[in-house]
Image 1 (spheres, helix red, strand yellow):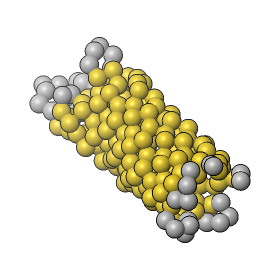
Image 2 (tube, helix red, strand yellow):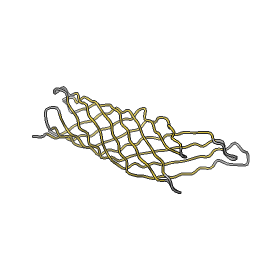
Image 3 (tube, helix red, strand yellow):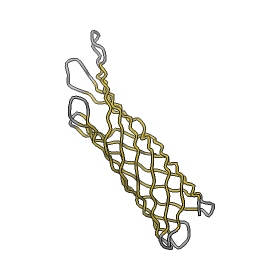
Image 4 (cartoon, one colour):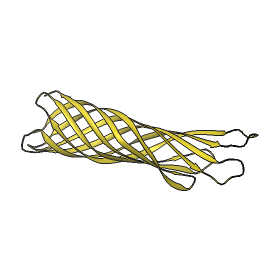
Length: 193
């Protein structure tokens, strides 16, 4: 027999990093704080094993990177990437000895949208900065691990690590590969039987 409960969750993604492949080079684009919200359900199949699934929205934040260039008109290029994702995740969990403590995995697919802005900066008096913008979306996947504790009141606190990858086509051909790595903390509320 199985028991099920529904849940609503909110996560804060701290120390989130983006590895972006821009202009044929891979670049770590620093960190940003993101936020996510999820709705789903969890089925308990045995004393310790359960399977949850959820629909989730994540706003990854905005990432900025600048680098110097060898160009007669421009000295520096600055890239800004803002990304968000809508995912469907499956989360198997193992609860230890009816203690409320669990260890789980995360695997999911979704659609990630990114807005990209490139600014070419100059110090020449007769030139102005040039800015180009593009956006796109594509299928993405994510995976990770989490640990948490479920209180008898239905409140769950959790934390873990998560990675997500997507390749987004850009105007004029080519694509930008985005790889997100993040540590997260979250709070859930389980309601139902």
